[in-house]
Length: 443
Image (cartoon, rainbow, N blue to C red; front, side, top):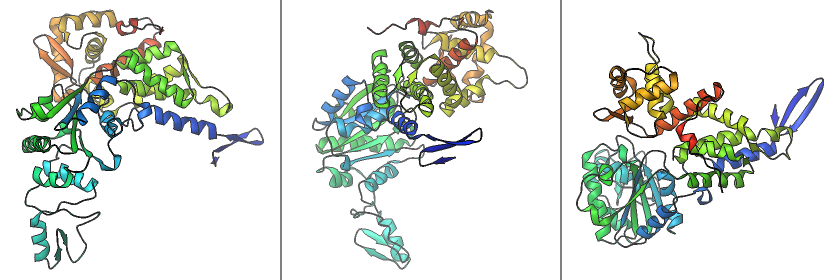
């Protein structure tokens, strides 16, 4: 039973009240510092990326430049974009953001941004329809007999087509940011062409409102398409995986905010397992710190410490309760129905074991031998590698070129390494993984 932050427990024949306030406050601080499932919203907890932040500040303050932020999943693109107004000193009230969906189009993206800015785009066709229904078209906003289509703010001049000219009339003289996140999800080719036109128009007009396009991609062309007109007006900020020192900064900031201490060995293991992704540093740190905070239930004055037991529980939780898409894809890939075999699992473990992102078939066979004690003939691995590139196995692997494979989702390698680490602990730590050998004490 819980009342006003106090837990009521029955101990023998006595009712004992325990103050849970310090523990709940501690968890709230951990939630602020370690955010694996949400972008960083407070600048104090955005660590590393100093060069990227400087580039962002410079480009947003350069007349005629828009910005594209791209890189692998889980490297912190959205967090950087969401804090762009702070880093470049733009007003947060004139910073507006939209997250794209697979079905998003140019019109739906910018209609949402206009709504975020307190305005509404009303095509002339809607006004005409309102008149036919016996409603009233009042200026730019169409009003039917039932309700007004203007939901907030004031409407802009209606037009047949939403485009750069109309957007510039609204935004060009107001200093602000329009952030288009997860743009890689957009599949409509016309949208890519129209966005390129808009980026160029905003740059040519030296608009005070800047556009930031964010998405998963290896190159700028992969994100926004091949448009020669963008080479001058669109600045590229590519986020690579973070260094060990940068990941360590994340843990240190969390320690200071939450009031928890990570033992050095645990800190280094978390950094090694993160594989350069801040997502995993936040994930393991949060679960570890939450576990360490349990001491506050017995002693509100205690100082939480993340040691080996807390780390192991966090590891288990990260494997079973981490990102659902990775967990489900892995399970689908390794499960066999008709003919039971662990070879699919062995192949994925072997690819994750490698230090290379693109792994040769012969090395996969060698790694299986190291992990299981029985090396298969690499010629026979095609029977398993092929299906792992197909939809029925969630396309976990990609064939890069003849004889070489890699994970389709870069985050998958780190996830499987968590599984390998958990398995190794259950065996008493018999294996020394190559990525763990790189752990160095801080000095």
